[in-house]
Image (cartoon, rainbow, N blue to C red; front, side, top):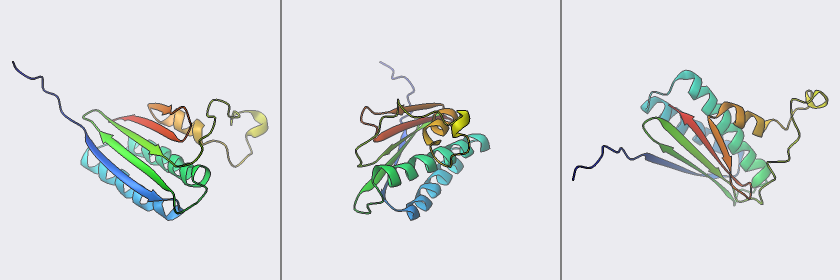
Length: 140
């Protein structure tokens, strides 16, 4: 019996200490994947923005800048999409009850836009029930 032509994904993983300097390792991985898989400039920009936001949130809000805790970043690259998963060791948060950053009274606030950005720039954004892991899908 002939097997269908199924191409397995390529998995990349980073274990980042919870400090701001870890972002350079993340950015290098995003650039490597974008170059290798010929990701469009628009998708590259969206991935860079979303992943920076998600990982900084995991480092600062999830792991509270505790360098003994790690942020795990996985990238599962398939022929037509990349699925990124960002997991921290924090307690999570209630992503369903966040203030609307587009509300007139919040427009001048400097924080509180992260989840809004993820949901609008990624093709799909899925949080686990606890709120300490987010999965971001990008078509390539």
